[in-house]
Image (tube, rainbow, N blue to C red):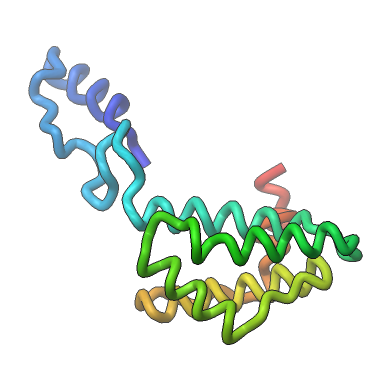
Length: 145
């Protein structure tokens, strides 16, 4: 994804000046750099945080770790800045209680909730068998090492 500064540099090189760069020289599906995140950016960042947190959650969490994870998940419907997203997630965790019994179970539970959201948004489902590859280990070819 090219940022505004990179696009301005390209425009400057090609025209000798950056004044030909229009305010729409950034990805039109995102707010301009320096602006607050839109609902899509916020969602991607939140899912990244949650999946990464689950990927490194203990396989045998202590009672305190379980309570803390439940508190984190249950705080989202109350604190999340997208009202309808928060309400939807709250309904989902009421219907499908979070499984904080261990890393694998939590990762699977989150993947299932994320896939519910993906379906509602008309997006492709993620293969939950690949959560460790995506959020913890990286691809088998070592390209993330």
